[in-house]
Image: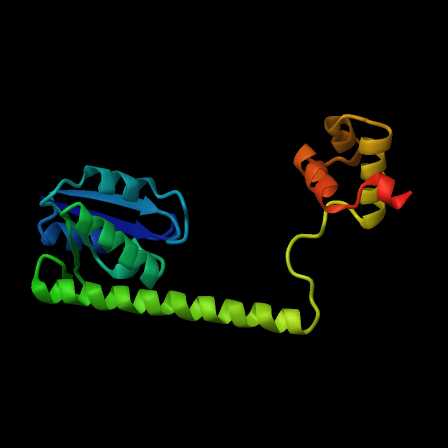
Length: 190
């Protein structure tokens, strides 16, 4: 069975071109969405993917109607392959039910992996450059040094419960426990 999926980005756009092409390609059922490709919630795509059974084929008019990037496309196609579901993109003439189409998918997967490696490399280079400039990376500490000393005194000298101290500083009790584990004891600072 061939299952079609069509998508337009806005309500003002029209699905007619895609649905006509999908019908001409022999799709038995067509699911659609009116949403950006980056949108997390695409109920039409979810329904189409749930409807597919082993031996079925998902058909789209163009790659960009299905996925927002090459890595996303490769992940979707790999997921389909694991379920023994074929994939056809009409405009790009890719059909994973053929050997050539399958090869193209592997090439797309390699490109996606290369793209992820480049992104990781750029992020790491940016972080290293920021560190070299003296930037402090990560979240701002919840408590400054004076507050940490006060936490230590409240917990160890005044013997207040951790939950009470956490409420006073408006932090999670886990933050107080970490603070207590990293500071010298109150007896050491007196």
